Amino acid sequence: MKLAIGCDNAAFALRDVLAEYIRESHPEIELVDFGLQDDSGKDYPDVAITVAEAVASGRVDRALLLCGTGLGVAIAANKVAGVRAATCHDVYSAQRAQLSNDAQIITMGSRVIGPELAKVVLDAYLSSSFAGGKSSGKVDKISAYEQTHR
Ligand code: RB5
Image (tube, rainbow, N blue to C red; front, side):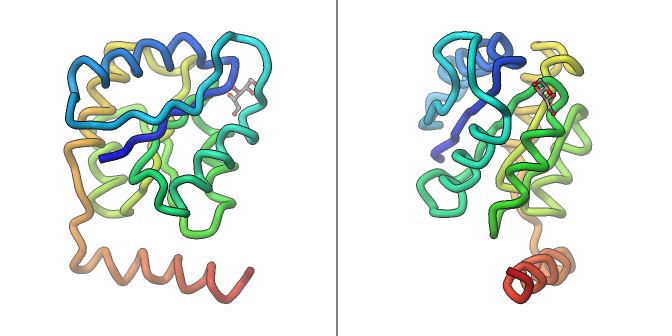
């Protein structure tokens, strides 16, 4: 799996922790880092839209986006057609984001969650996959709306 990671300046430190965790604990994942190299600079919509476009184009399979709250990056990423981004700070939501919503992007806030819980939540997301079945029709309705309201 190709996993993109991106952050704004508020989440630079959490990005470093989670990127290192993924590299060490998930050697099967190819990490594509869209993050900052220092803690100055990028606004959350810039990185969120760049990463969401990488998801929409198929360049990466899934993504982790980080900002102060996890909210701004989710709002921005969800503007990109075909992308479903979900803010998750607990294990159940992270599982359901995949199982029910087929969310290709998980977002978290560095001012909301600590690094150790963030690792557990990320693992819950990464180890889950879309259940299909009854959930497919609901996700299809979102896609259908998107296609007719561009
Ligand atoms: C800081 O720019 C803060 O607004 C941002 O990281 C994020 O929390 C927005 O949703």
